[in-house]
Structures are given as structure tokens and as C-alpha cells.
Amino acid sequence: MFVLAAALAIAPVQKAANRLLAATLVVIAGLLIPYAIGFAGAYDAWRGLTFAPFAIPLALGPLLFAYASALEENRVSRRLLWHFAPPLVQAAYFTICFLLPIGRKWAWYTGGHDAVVSPVFSALTLTSLAGYALAIGPVLKRYRARLADERSDDDQYAARWLSRVRAAIVFSLLVEVAFWLWSTATGGIDYFQETGLYLALGGLGLYLGVAGLRQAGLPPPLRALDRLPEPKAAPARAPTDWRLIAGEIADRTRAEGWWREPDLTLPGLARRLGTNSGRLSRAINLGLEVNFSVFINGLRAEAVADAITIRPKADLLDLAFEMGFASKASFNRAFHARYGMAPSAYRRQVSNPDFSPLMPDLRRADA
Image 1 (cartoon, rainbow, N blue to C red):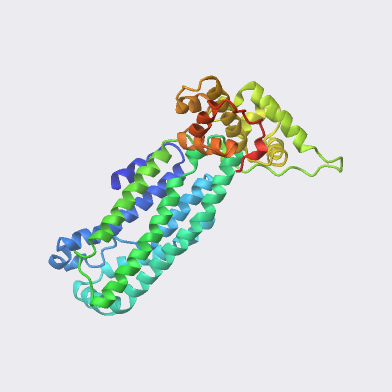
Image 2: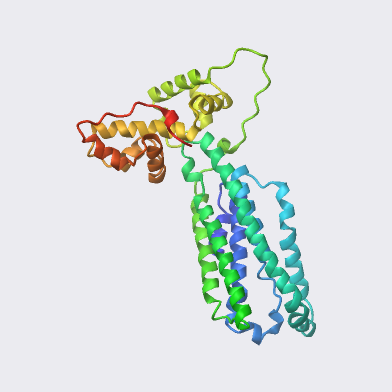
């Protein structure tokens, strides 16, 4: 995890998000250190290590939340700073206790800390992780909505692995509660019985690091993640027929073949159409009733469907990449949204003598 953290810290793109994720991996590694050296008997041999500030569990939730927020906003917002007050207090507490003379330190560790402070920290950790696991959900939802509004290759930026990490955190909390109940019922559990929990934590950290490093290798979304300026108030005039405008945009985009570009963005298409991003976004959203990603990937799905009727033996994935899809997953989702069936099922229907292809109707697709 330290190696992965170092790789993330020096990644040349999306620096804010990657450094936050690197800090998250360092925190997870820190949570493993006391267990590892305790399992080896180091605390028994050197009591001076007691309270060494390796593990700061209250930092894990805020760092993951800040990472998700940095993905959404493409920067670290100052409003997130107060989220790090509890882990800073926890780190300061452990550091002060660590610096105490060994006699006083051990007396406090076996006395007030074990009876009062440790249970409070444990409860705060569980509450913090549960709260931040829930808070990350809306952030990811907004992030993906903005991507879908402004990128055609939004799927590769969507960080779906972070949703799986959220689920793993929730599962880990349930396991932690189960361990706590087990400890209460049996009078305590030893290091051997906790091995599975720490192995799971290590596995989660490695998955987080590897998946995050793959995300870090992607080029930044650039302006696709900047909020579009609000349109200036205009004098009263006849209502705009967005459906007519959107139809013209769809026809021209389809005819020019711009949808073939795998990394096509809303600003990029606006430049080709000679308009601005705000007007194009409203035309697609109001006129076609879909977002930018569904619009472009719907055109790509239509092109694949046309190619299937001409080349029914061609490899479906080859056709998908040829038409601009960036991944198999995004291709399957877009095709099913456009035609209500998987590409393979569509190809089977092509061989049916009674088969007739659906007419283009982008409003069939759901975002």
C-alpha cells in the first residue's frame, strides 16, 4: 500500500484527488501496523511503543469523502477542512500519550484509556465510517451525472469501483460489530481471532490502491467537469422549440460522424456545431430528453446495429470500438438502453426473415 500510495502521490494528472487517495492508503497501512507488531509481540517486548500514533482510524472516512469530492469538483474544497478536525485530535491525543514517561503511559493505557477513551474512539470510528459511507453516495451520483451531461466516454471516468469500496466499508462495519459482540459475549478475543478482519482490511486497501491507480492513469476530464456558466437573462421572446433544434443537431451529428470520436465532449461538439456548450446542453436535455452521454452513445449504438445487419458475422466488440465506444460495459449498456436487448440478442434477430430494424428515436433511451 505504501508503494501504491507513492505512485499515486507522483501521478501527473488529477493531482488533488490522487494525493488524497494516497493519504487514504497510508492511513489504512497505519491501521495494519499495530496489529502486525502486536502479533509479533513487539508491544510486550517494548512497552515504550504503546500509543505510537500509527493508527488514526478517524481519518479514513474524511479522506475517502474528500477523494470523491475532489473527483467531482476537480479540486480540494476548503469547506472540507473541518472534516479533518476529529482525526487531528485523535492523532494529537496518541502523540501526547506516546511522549509520556513509560510508567505513566502504561498506567494510563491500562486505566483511563482502556476504560473510557478507547471505547469512545471505537464508537466514533464506527459512526464516522458509516456516516461517510452514506455521504459518498450523493457525491458520486452528482459526479456521474455531470460526466454523463458533458462526456461521451463518461463510463471510464465514473469510478464505479469506489461504490464497491463503499459497500465493502458497510460490510466491514457489520463484521466489526459482530467482532465486538463476540468479544463481549466471550470475554475478549485475541490476535489470532482478529486475523480475518485485518486481512480483509488489507485486501480492501490493496483493491482501493490498484483501482485508484488505474483511474489516475486516465487523462483528466478537463472542462468536462467545470460547471457551465448560467445563461444571462434575455428579453422576453417566443418560446424556443428545443425539440426542433435538437432534431437538427442530432441529424447533423449523425451525418458528420462526430460520434465516432471515443473522447467526444460537450464543448468539443459545441465547437463543431458553431454554438456554445450551454445551448447545446439545453437542446439535448430539453429537446431529446436525454443527457449528452446517452445522446452520443445512442448514435453509436445505432451505427453498430446498422453494421450488424450488413456484417452479421463481425465481432461485436470490434464493431463497438470502431463506432467509438470506449469499453465493452458502456457498449452493452448503451445498446440495451437504445434497443431494449443485448447486442448478441439483436444479432440473432437479424437472421430472422421477419426482422425489421427500429427507426432512430433517441428519446427511447434512459439516462
